Length: 343
Image: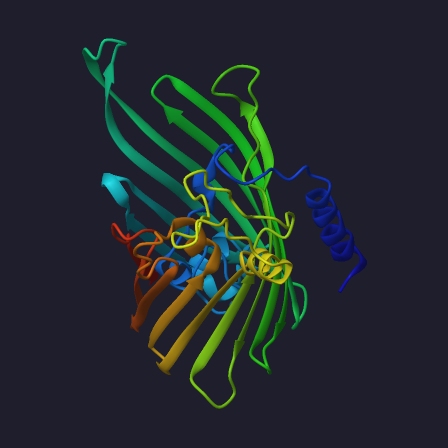
């Protein structure tokens, strides 16, 4: 690794470490940046994976995975979300020997149209709500084992007459052991700020996050497991629900967790696990489990499969099609479709 690239890596991660990382829980602008951008990523449980293969959709949230193997690829992703909300991603990649590999992405979410009323309820028409982000990503292999990458994002949100612009970057570094089929990646995502606010003087933080991911393909089984550590910048991700009084219905006593249980609960909220079963070169089945999502979104009376996700993918010639369902709530699961094409 050259001295120049070492300086670049330390400078980028030094920048990320110097940021004041925001608290979780609905007080952030541009939160749509945390949406999973492809069926494969969603099926594995969250919004980021550390897998080194020519899948362009991985590069959006882990730019160190953008590589020359993705040259002239296009990735189309669409999500049929709750309540007629739709979002999607379109990416295209191209590589140059001296410059590295680049990926251009447009990310959007359309919340639909809403009725505009006055304080008495009289209808005054309709308004729209949407957000989008153009992204330019860059990745480069430093040698056979190390890769770095970065994204720069323009951000725009529009809710009726309220608008906001922002700018953000992601920085990533990966260690790739091709012989051992092992990858580990460290990513600092959404480092940036609002350039203009919805209300002048009311500045909101971005959903900045540090993530560590690893994957390992087993030597004697057609299986790859993936482990993701999320929100490393903040230990306590628990949320106190005022509707949950933690009272035992039989004794009337307040239920309290032991210190060991409390520690385990907080630790597990940072962990997302996933796996890919690879029976053939062109077909895969995917599963994921997100503990934090399950704890936040489950209903005690009916927990169902909240927090679990699944999907599959197959390749035919130049086309790579994937589908996933990710359970956020018992009311239903979004359908996620992805199409990759080598042009």
